[in-house]
Length: 230
Length: 293
Image (cartoon, rainbow over all chains, first blue to last red; front, side, top):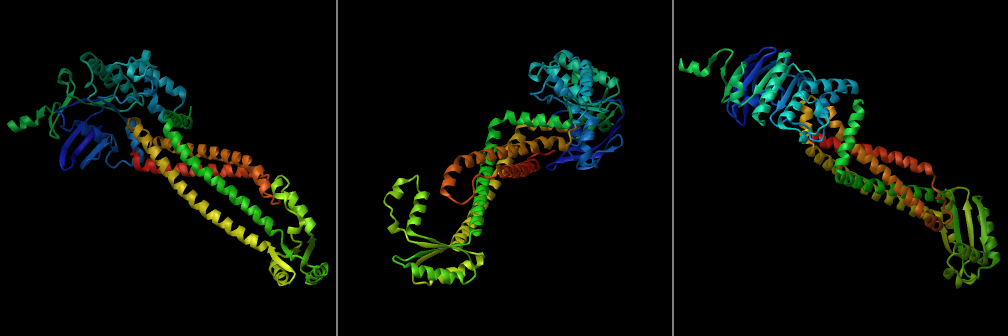
């Protein structure tokens, strides 16, 4: 599903990622862990072509991300949904309008948009807040609205960059339950997090990034650290 | 609701949420179109005046005081014998006074002390061909009994050079204002792009196409241009309507007024077209430079 082949990314001569090789299967749930500045967000940005790698190749299914023509970029971003620590909801739009926004962009009919948005709001349990504005929601509700917006186009992959970073523990677990539900429905999820409580208590694959390198991969069950000590 | 109406809604929301920017942009463009419209009107007026004078090949020959009727008659014979005269009319001192009083009837101060003694008798001569005016004027001016000769070639020449000057000055000012309008649109739209930075980022991330993100900004530029064009044409129309009675009296026989209303329709269409062009150019430059999609 997702493949990084010898990917490096340099900013002003400093490597944010260095020779990263990894593969993620369909419907996998993967935690990207590691300290701040390790390269987790850079890895996610490369997947939606917000950044270009300095070297290497990236594939999402058959899509060659590095060589994807500019005009195909919107299609990629519909195939790969994203959510963020700061939610990025549009403050002047209601929850309903925020969630339906990606469908509006595609010029779909009002009926189609209304039906899909209602379904999605039900899935994230925000039907009763459909006509609230983001400032009227709690952090957990805002993140659930952001997830609904990211999922409305039924993307194959969901990238989550510190989605629980701004949330209290209870809201964070609610968001995790929701992500787990989406994953069980077949969405591949790649989630960058600092929250060890969450990542260590869930059975999903963990990729630890340190200084721009894949330091350990729970799937391979062998870490670079262990290799060094051998 | 289709994409176009959604884009229109986005555009109107952005315009109404930044009313000062929008009013500023419309005012600057209004100035451009208003000045442009005024110069078009002046230009059309001078053209009409020019054609009026060109269509009236006429020489006024004023006689010296005490010229006898016999001398006047013999000059008439001499001119008619050239075969180039369309019409020749003698205007006596009394007739000259009558014409003068008619033209100034609403200003008694100008007519009160004027008597026929101070107005000269004259010939009004028109030729069959405007090109013969100079030759006839030359013959007349060489006559001993003629004090002064005024013929339309002078008026046409002066008017022609004035029209040319007005056009050049007008075109220069309008070009300057067009550049200012484009720059103002560019600045206002750049500001709006920066105000909507977060929205644009979100649009990109949820898969909006470049066209979808750029279009509302282009439509905003077009809106400024079209609004300014409509306002400016309305003000030009009102201005002309207001000034017509004064100018009509001032220009006397020159048939400029009333102005055909179709001219204003053409002016409106032309200004709207320019509004679309100027607004689009400003917006396109702004989105190309500041909108990284």
